[in-house]
Image (cartoon, rainbow, N blue to C red):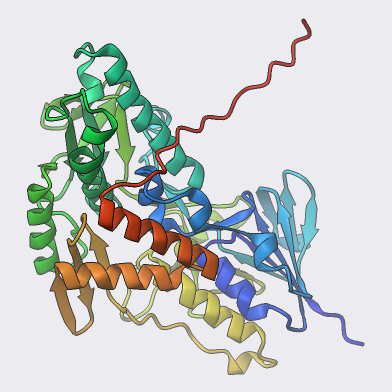
Length: 420
């Protein structure tokens, strides 16, 4: 009996999960490796950060996802190095061999080499980071009510760096929290002085979307009272003050960094085949210089006639590269493999209630209809029926009452193992 081919997938994001699903219960041995035990629906992290939905509603344990699989194993560990000559990977826990290796490690927040900024600001690429933002912002409000006077101006400014979808969605959500929720949670506090500040290196928000979307999102941010600093570059943050290239400064204790991403590179492959922290691949997602190592999703740099500088690092690319590679791996002959071609299905962002922008290939629209469209599409992309229902209920409750009951401050306790 022919031995089954062993395929190791490193990373369980959109790309890795779609590949695993394509290979589920097929004649392949599949191992999914990730340093967390769950798949995360990153587009809704900002709602976790604002206390609108629970982290569990957009997190899906891998062992639950693959519970009925006969050929997929999951390992909770962190891959440290690839040994391509030995068809082996080294992890923090063990070593694993492979016949085919698929790197789907995705991206992390890009702090552009500024270690101080990385240590003092909050990214939003993991569940833990979203929860940390929620904790810190809510603790700031508790501090304000305890002090009852403005002893620290930094408590009154929430600064978001970066005006892509993550930045504008977060700014809109915090602006609505300021207007609708905080006055009820803290009835004796005046939040008129609380500022939501969005710092952008571009002149308009959502620079990668259409001019109509940019103009409308700019209008929405203004209507919500978000202070939009355009054409500004953040150069430093010392934990108390944000400094910008123009010389302006902002006192703040809450800085959320949404100004870019960079690939999660694994050591061991030829560094000449890495461009802008992404592995260079051919049209089949095979890493340049290797026959049995592939990269999919945000970590892959694939040049095509339509995308000569690589594909955008968005979920749609990751999902469809995972599906395409899965389909190819299941084919018996290499000559039957299909090249990947990205079909841009559009982009969207929401900036508060009844405010959203949608760019489809042949249609662009904004406002109420766009907001409902955004909600419906994101709800359909959630994995389980239970989670769809939970999120729908939270959204409807928030829609009717302009409130939620999920503003929990949950900070892990440290055990003291010292004997008394």
